[in-house]
Image 1 (tube, rainbow, N blue to C red):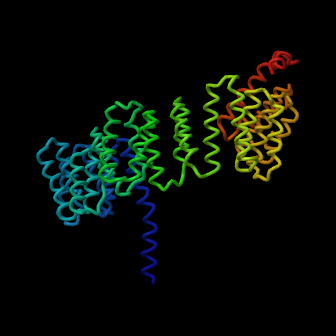
Image 2 (tube, rainbow, N blue to C red):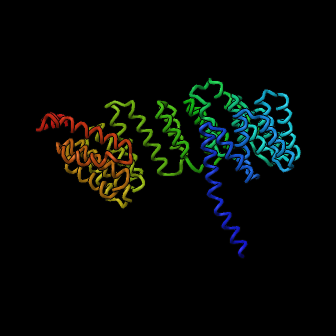
Image 3 (cartoon, rainbow, N blue to C red):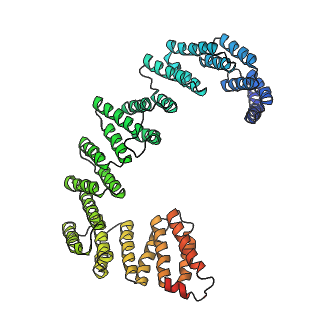
Length: 473
């Protein structure tokens, strides 16, 4: 028992010394003071012969000091011990390479590869060892040979990275396709890796290579993955018509369960000024979706697109379409977007806020969650501000602010309180609200608050009566 206690005490008291030596050695090494670092690493290696990190750092010190013979002697002794990991051959080869003994370096690199023949599991460590010294061709040989000998091993990720470094883009894409195909990586991860190699130009060589590799893979191993990848590529190239073809295939192959991808594609097409393709996508959703809300959203998007190019003479026809939708869907907590869209159309297009306000007030009578209620009140407040009914608008905005204090929607409502107070000419109260909002978690709201705050402050400094500011407001 006493011996065990003494051993434990000796072990614990030695830990701070080891930690201190390690810290100082790294510090000197990072500062380029290799002679000082070497003193500590030689001691650390002597006291911890199994710590490969200490041994490798000591060898680096020898090499930085051009003491190649000492590095060689140490590495050969390790090799003769019989317990060294095969990466020791790479270390020796690199030491010879630093002395321009290229042929001798190659012999030791080959010895490292031979070790894989005996045990394919060495492949990863040896491949990474070659990568460390930028010996990428050797690293590829190590990874590929290990996988040949043991098909259970998968080093396609490392292989893809190497091909990317070498500028062998097609081989890189092929390696990533293998990763996707065998389920070792997600599409999101692969896209994150290859996106830097892709441009918006469909004629770009890399874009064409990815399309070629993905199509080849799709023909050989049919899977929805390749449709998703091709759809992503076509979206990057702004070829939304081709992306639409892929998304329809995905929808059918996945059992026609969700329209989310098609909805996102329609929105993206509209955002990128491709309204005709957006129309085709939303019409497809309207025709094929069995979900009431999804169908309604598609119909509202189609009306929004129609409004982009419409003139006043088209408004009666659009109004009729909104009325038909209201007749079809009625007033429901899950279709509030219809009432808001129709009210906005009546107010901001037809200047008929008198008809719009009752629609939203009727919607507020429905049983709904606080976010749905806030959504309606925000829209109602905006229309009341447009109608210059500032006090009533402030009531609704303040209610949202109170009910959703720490939410972004609550902060947006606070900003609308400030805006409405500004329009009303109550600049002091507007500034009070804006001061709080300058620390908003939403950068957009914080920026807007800062701009409005500066507008009020700058125009109040030399004009205490704020006459000009009131006229502007």
